[in-house]
Amino acid sequence: KNLGFKFLDSDLCIQEKEDRLLYEIISSEGIEGFLEIENRVNASITMKHCVIATGGSAVYGKEAMTHFKQDGIIIYLKLPFFSIEERLGDLNKRGVVLKDGQTLKSIYDERIPLYEKYADITIDCQDMQIKDIVTLIANSVMTV
Image (cartoon, rainbow, N blue to C red; front, top):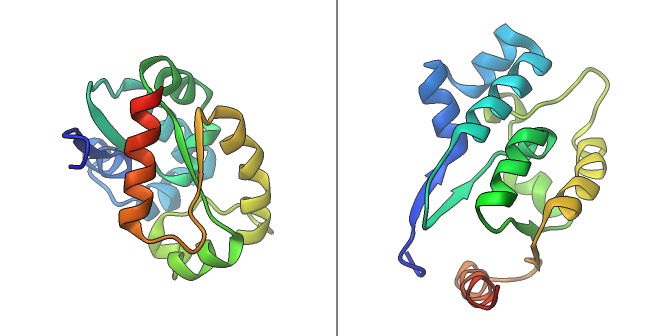
């Protein structure tokens, strides 16, 4: 709203196109199947003047990330592991892509380099209020 842009949650797009909740897709299609669906749906999103919030595993989709990078600005909202762990709660109901033997910490460690690779802008959100993060995002987008 601060930028006057629309907002789109890509996880909701996936659920809508598949007519299933994320954890249901993961349960029936497996992790690789889910990642393929996520990549396909994200790569098909075309919007202008829109903030697109993706799920954390979107970063595994090369085509989707290339598409997002070509069409817009990728912002990585950086948080320490303990903050992520606290916010997520029950991973099974969140549709978190968790392979056998993986922990939330190992996923965090695996994804950080990918987030950093694709990010045009990184904002360290530790100890920040939402309104301050929004201001930083707006200011960063206006200078790019």
